[in-house]
Length: 520
Image (cartoon, rainbow, N blue to C red; front, side, top):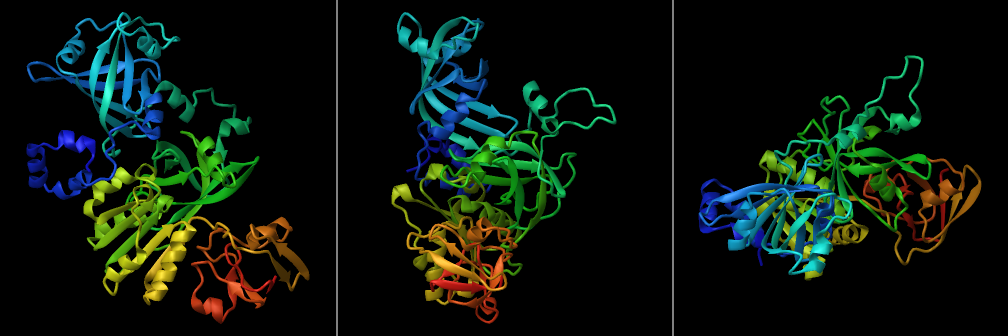
């Protein structure tokens, strides 16, 4: 199967041009895709509903294309079903060029733009013209009651293909309303008058000042946020694998959450993070999605890196599960710039739920392999690692099940020292049981439920102890074990730290024994 838009647009002359200019292999991925992209999905429908204009191209009987701008209130282009869109043709078009073209040839192409967030959606289809006398019910569905413009006809488009383009060369532009949100126009307060908190619109107290300069909807539940310096200054340099501690307003207080920087580390103008909205989570991701708007100022902690990419030239295998693509994408940019051999293996529930998919396909081509579960494609880690060169380094980020399977496979093949991992969650396991933790120095005993981490139980009991990532990546919460048998689940501590120093990361690790004594 191939992308429907590739079937339409990749003519023999186009393929010959791709070959001549060196992009044929990268574009071949569109002809080998599992998802045809020949219908309107949830992501596309949401994007269409927010647009108040688009550009359309029709074909005249002379063979010349005619491009026209169409505008109206937001949402005037309507999704009628997964294969059909339509819009009301408002009075004012007196030349009837598009109408005449469509009467002779129904082929049409649309481009929908989101300039502030540098997104664009292309749609190909076949259009038909309807009027009230032929289909009054359909015209009624296309009307916009609150918009005072006469509807002369309706244009209904049967969708044949749609595709998202990368943001390259899209210059951000803003409406007056968007500019007001970014930099509200109001008289400056007198020198002695301090701005009210609501007007300040600043979250956090860290030393790194950033502003939300762009928001992109990558999938139905994942949004990318572009963060820039408020004055446009260059940002501190970061390396692949780095993450930001970002302030989030949760239940009336500010909490910090870690998000990997997914943009190319060579960029100094902006950091990009991507956040999955976890509807069943602890609420931070939902609060971030609700509160991170254009113009919001953040005071973050400086970026740090607990998942650094090696500087040597050995071949690399990159493995990502779902939102775990964020640090992996930054690594791919770095490896490509170095000219170092690498492969990306990207797994998820389905193609429409894989963030950055189009950009990765366009940039990395055949170096990217996809494993959409809804198509029955499974990442065989044993086969992948067995086929790798003996000195290959493996970097992986993803859910606990993927990381646990990778660790077990690497141990079986004697490759544990070549694997670097980062978790993005610390989900409890179904067989986790309650344990008792003794704090020797505090002379306290605390019960840890099977659904709790040791760290959460201590914090709930009022015990203050250092912590940071909360998913076993950084080692900040490491505590010495005085008695009992820990079950290590972190990827921060070395074997010596676990065995000889008797340390454990209490944010993720548990116990094989029913009792643990900690040096607290």
